[in-house]
Image (cartoon, rainbow, N blue to C red; front, side, top):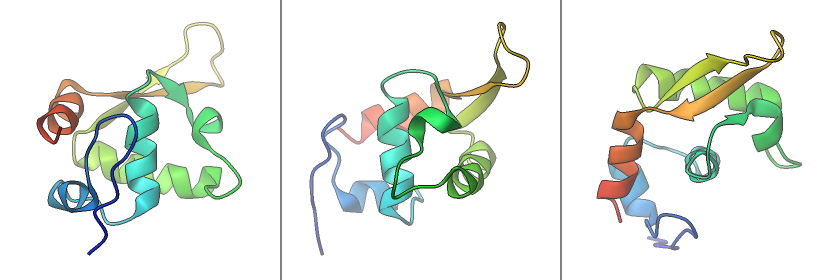
Length: 94
């Protein structure tokens, strides 16, 4: 099994799987959210579409890892933020 270490939290693939994550895209999304609150458009890249991210964020909300927070400046924009439970789950894996 690949136990590649990630940059931000120093977690390996098995630790992410133990959290209930099933893809590297999900792990990447959580890694990015450790940097702070981000809009989906800020997380998206050439390998991860906004549509895929919406599904990932839906899953993370059901797992209570993240929540959506409306922008105070732009009603069209929503930020994704780690919940306390999500942050604790990531930090326990370090």
